[in-house]
Each structure stands twice: as structure tokens, then as C-alpha cells.
Length: 345
Ligand code: SF4
Picture: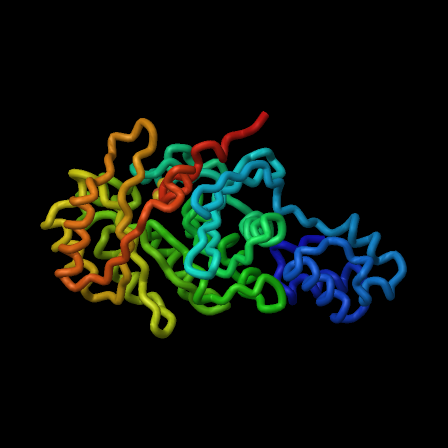
């Protein structure tokens, strides 16, 4: 019986079909696994009262977050690698932020979007992650690494809206208060701007989560050179969709802009970007390009980064500086996939 990709209600229904009894025992088992990470049930009164049930659960409950095979840390940032049942590896990153821990999760093994500045894009798409494999990353961080993850961002390997069914089911499980219990306002889905997927996320039955868009360019010409998706979905079509996205109260759309030397870092780029963003309530993360080995794209100098930041601020854009936390372990934006994703064996 599956559990990691099940909401409380889905699990309890299946539990009653498989093991009989009332809702109470199924709820106790669900809480024990999803809230406390415990997979031994002998001490659970509701289970102990029913002879044989602990044994049935031990053999019948499919709890498969994958195997934690590697972890590396740098300045509080921890990148870990999970080996999936078919021997593919995925990467996730724990980032301490103020007093909370954010987990950056992967949604696919590899990615087919082909963004030029991204290591994962160079792998191509190997496969989508299941909802259990997505939720499993949170489970591993909480219960194997002992990190009290409260924020989840879908900014790891893959384009989450290219895997919408499993993303949506994973979101249902993550926000379920009787299990993982992660508040919607602490979940962010980052996309290159797949408009059909954004429309679908807007209708998520658990209520809308935060949306981040990886923009990286002030106009179609530059964006199409950096991000092939822009040849199919123009920036103007993207903005129409973004403007219709239901933001939570006091929230804003997050926009990511990877600043690349000589590509998108001129004053006229800052001006055009500000004009594009003006009709929307946005917070822009300005990210210095992380040069991947073999890439022809280069980071801006510190001075060029500061200049671009100041131009945007002068244009009235809310800009957040993004440092390079995790850069040394290749856990910064666009750098996952350096050792994961390849078949082992
Ligand atoms: S930036 Fe995101 S969408 Fe683009 S190739 Fe990389 S993983 Fe895929």
C-alpha cells in the first residue's frame, strides 16, 4: 500500500479497504509516518490492539523515498543525492534562511527545457519524478537528515510544470495538515513560464501556491537565445498568464533574473525589464550567473552586478540580491545535475 504520494483521506480510504476497521487506525498510521517519520508501528496503540496488523504494515507499506547516497555541505547549505528505485539519482538542497529551513526539490530527472545557463538542461529529460519521489525528498530531509523543513521551493532539477499531474498530487500531500503540513504560503513553484501549467496551478484544489518565473531577459530576442521555451511562448503571452495568476494576499510574483556578462546586463536591458514588469506586483531575485564547466556564459563582475541592481531599483523594481550560497558545492541556481541523474551501473 502506498503512502508517500497519498493525502490523509486517500490513505485512510485505501487502509480501510486493505485492513478494515475505522478511520482512527488509518489516521494514526498516516500521522506516524508522514508527521513523525516512524515506520515501526508496534508502539502505536491503534495498531497494537489489532493482532498481526503491525506485521502486515511492515511488509505491505510501500515507503520508498529512495536511498540517501551522498551529502555535502557548505556554509550551512546541504546538497543531498537520492538514488531512486531505477538507480537514477536526483539532487535536493537544504538552505538555512533566517530561522527556517528551505528545501529545494527536484521534479524530474534531468530536464528538456534546454536553458543555456543550466547544467540540468544539458542532461536532457530522463524521466518525470512520481509524486512519491517528490514528497520523498521532504521526507528524507526531515527524517533522515533531521532538518525541520518548513519551506519548499521547486527549483531543483527539472521543470515542475512539465510534470503537472505528479506536481499537483505532491502539492496535495505536502499541504495536508494531517501529514506533511507545509503551509501553501511557504511553497513556491518555479517555472520557465509554461502557460498551460501556470493556468492549471492557478486552479490547484488546495489553493494557489507561490509562483516564481525564471525570466532572465528583457525582451524576446535575448530570451529566445537563452531559453528555447520562449520561441513557443512569447514574453507577452507569458505576462498575460502571469497577470491572471491568483496571488495570495500580501504576496507577489517572484521573478528570477540570472545576470550574464555581456548578454542581459546593459542599462537598456534594465529599463526594458522594468517596463515589462511594471503592470505586475513582483519581487525580482537578481542572480549572478554560476558558470558551469564548459559554458560560454560568464558571470558579471561585482561592479556590473551592483550597477544593474541599482538601475532596476531606480526604475522602481523591488530587487532582492541573491548571494552565491551553495556555489562551492554546485548547489546554486542552475547547477544541479553535475553528478546526479546518470544511471549508476
Ligand atoms: S533552468 Fe530549470 S527549466 Fe531550464 S533547463 Fe534548467 S532545470 Fe530545466
